[in-house]
Length: 200
Image (cartoon, rainbow, N blue to C red; front, side, top):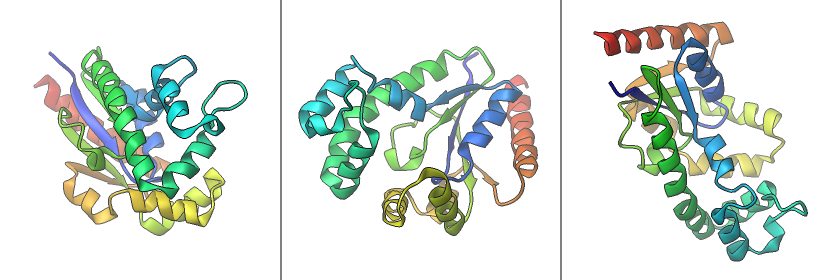
């Protein structure tokens, strides 16, 4: 029986990683598109060569690795550049993600996709889970955690679907405005519900 594929998403700094790690500790297979997005641009990968040819050597560090900060600055300043990068990377990330999810040897595979609804590329998931926090909480967490400017936070938030639209499209919503234990208890309940459905 193929695994049940749960797409986990939420805005920046919503607590996706904490929820995903909890699901993995409960027994789900975790497939994180952020990690896969790093793999496809590692030194020696064809995508990195294409990025260097398109954006120039300033987006490559002296050691041959991608300079993520320089690339982020370029793509958030110019929507057409972001579209070019997404057109290159998203199909590669999607293919790898789905292969790993479908080959999971657990009843539940959790696919973590920050832009799950925005990308429109993951129709294969069986259900979606949104980790939800108010926008102001996202801003505060991102500014304190990621060392980015307010303008960069605004650009990141603008590139993401608005909070209510995300909630409206989700099959499941977990609020992460309380403690970590409160988040875990909601995640635990959902995992129990999904595994029960899978085995009946």
